[in-house]
Length: 458
Image 1 (cartoon, one colour):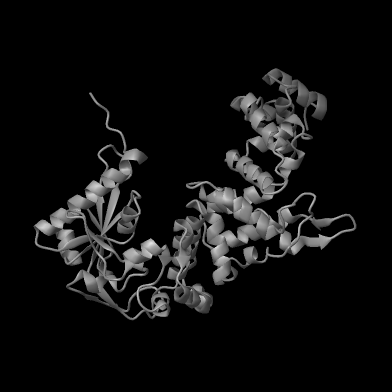
Image 2: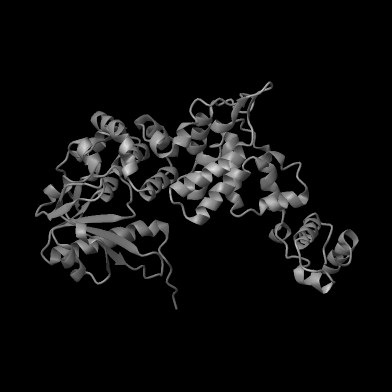
């Protein structure tokens, strides 16, 4: 009997294309026009394999939902329906977004159209979209490309340009300004002069966008493999000072050259961002971005050198506030804050007691702490000796030695005449330290240790 397995990454793109093609054919077989549209067309023309597909069609939402049994009306009032195709192997479902041809009327809230008027033609539909390279349509059966906005020439020119008046496009949805930055950085394109001018003019209006949407866009910038370019462009457009003023404040903050020959805090952070791999975890990426966020407010010039007293502690509080402001999930906030709080501890690893080092190495997602330290070193003095020391220690130490089962518990202390109280924590901590140091190995040894060091009862 064969076992069905979820689609692997190497097959998912093919499965997504096949699913979208089947949806399109079904629409056409029922008498509607339909085309691939947007980013999937752009990526196909650039020789990339899209993971997601959008379809533009003359069918109205209620007609789409009638044709397909498994749908989600994610924006039916705006003509958008999500078709869900289950992975027969039990993996993540494939989603195909189907949008009715439409023309939008007014954007009072800077995000949603005030009214939607369905159109009869794809040509009218693409006029409401954001950038020319995202306004291309593809007939996947004939392979004909419909280009009503000069998108193909902009692909060839490696140019990000809005469809129509850039100020109008950005007023409709302010997040498009950040999307322009992300697309330009991700693809290595230039931003059209008039488009760039409009972003600089309207940058302060980015605050009309919800913090969650801004966060999601920043997540993509940090994890798509071109984080440095994204943040350089955010700075050049004036958006960085609006969405992350704490990062903008890093510019011009000098560092001691003996430790940071690369330059100021901004340059150092950019070098770390450059080292982030595509697809890295969001918490690592944000930890990299924010690890030195406490340096600007703690900068001082001492007699011996430039110093940033307690910048990790100050930075941790700032990171927590930034995460709250951007509505991060609690677990992500905790991990980002931990990365910032602990990034300076690597300087002491060779001097740590065995128990202290083991406690350090068992921090949740310690691989992220280690990777942040590696990137931090490569972006400054380039000395990886402490990184290699910890990495080798991890490889040579069993998991049960780093996080061993406790030799005694509070119940054991009570059984030996102790009254429950605050000292339990001190006693149990001392026992665990001795265990981590390799001094204690058995329950009996732990009881004897407690009696010798803390007495038989309290």
